[in-house]
Length: 172
Image (cartoon, rainbow, N blue to C red; front, side, top):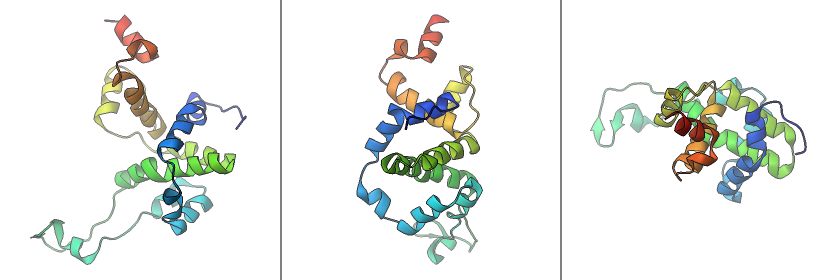
């Protein structure tokens, strides 16, 4: 992957972060466990269509339960858009990116990165913390990058090695 990417985020994923992500998620089982779904993901170019792959209805049991052993009124339930996006962000997109790197198919890597940019930012405590520090969060790619920064710098107390941590400490 010698291509020059257009954004810092693309460079970030195409570099060691992408390689580390692949090594953490390595294994033949990840790709072979659901060939049909994976084939659909490879074939679609649009995130909106990829979301439809996760439009599933629960089994009859869950139509009348919210918790184990507690019967509730029968109600149709479906996976919401935010939940679908979380599944895409944490499973389908990294697998698509890893497969692209593994097979040297640049178009899969670019599609994975584009999908991250097209998905709204995640809402979680880590993202909220960075937002409070004035860090712009525009999409799911940004939130994934911030989660990685937290794990690789904040959690390891390597503030001075991080531009954000250095700035925060410098402003204290």
